[in-house]
Image (cartoon, rainbow, N blue to C red; front, side):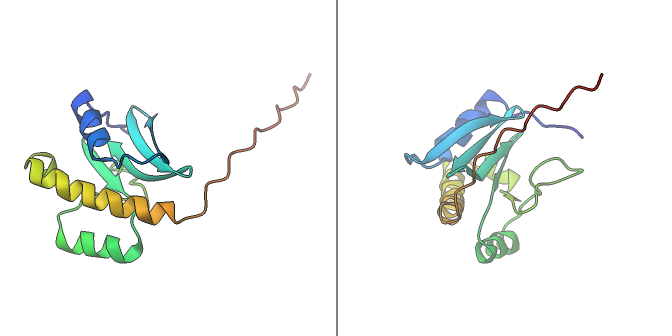
Length: 129
């Protein structure tokens, strides 16, 4: 499975369209970036593609009216996420406004979900002689 890497320009653009909110955390993920609220990812970057996690009704609207793409590796796209149209990467500032609008919808949706529980550390496996 090939993991697309985001360029520095892709990462800069992603950071510029993610909401500036005290609860938002942007962190690296497999050479890309993810934007989280309450421990849940609401937007991510996979190569140049931005993916968002939307409420079902919003996802249906986006996917029925725009040229969305799968989000994640082609062999195994991330379920529940929709890749924003690749053409929006090339069309200029007006499309950043559209990207921000969909990312904000994703933020609002995921911020309303229960916080992700922190993982409990596993006990070390016993060594066999």
